[in-house]
Each structure stands twice: as C-alpha cells, then as structure tokens.
Image: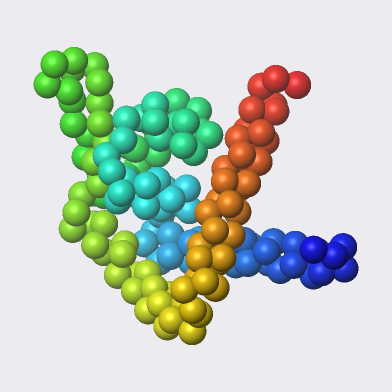
Length: 153
C-alpha cells in the first residue's frame, strides 16, 4: 500500500479507536461505573476469571484489580467464588442479570453494526474480520509494552 494511502488510513483507525473508547465510556457513565470496570465486566461476560487473570488481561496491579472487583461486587455486578479444593483460589463471575443490563445498552449499536456489516460480501467481510483481529492484537501488544515500560525502564 502506498505511503499516501497510509497517511489517510492510520489516522482513520486512530479516530475509530478513539470513538470506541468514548462509546464505552458513555455506557460506563450510564451505569455509574468506571470505564475500566465496564471493560472487566465485558471480559467476565465471556467467562469467569481469577483476579490474577484479570490483572494480566488489563495490565492493572493486583491491588487495583482487588479494588475494582470490590466496587463491582458492592454494586452487584460480580460475585467471588472460592475454589472447592483450594479455598485460596478465587474466581470472579459476572452476575447474569446485571450482565444483561449492561448488554441492553449495546443493543442499538449491535443492531446498527449488523446492518452495516450486511452490506459486505463474504470476501470483504473476511478482510474486515482479519483487519479487526490483527488490529486487536496490535492494541494488546502495544498496551502491554506501555504497561511494562515503566517497570523496566
């Protein structure tokens, strides 16, 4: 791809990423949550996780994750479950009713995105999906670099 096209597309992707963050911040604000709390809820909506896994996934310190879980538990969004064999092992579960409340705020966006994506053929959609997957990997890797930079500089 030419350099001039990259000068157009990279800022477009950055604008998209900024708007995604602002959208999620608006959802969090509607729920009375921190944006990071909302992102953790979205992770827990896929599967229960340990506090350590949440720290790894978010780049937050253990203490910050504990405070985040405390906030979400006090608000009724999550529950902690101790391991049957190792009581020290705690898994954090999203509360299904509260997760449905969160998901309802994404329904309008989801419907509009489905309509938008329906415009594309299978080959175009595959390219879009590949781009989003690879962009997600870039964001994960770059966030991890930034999170670890302060501890190793």
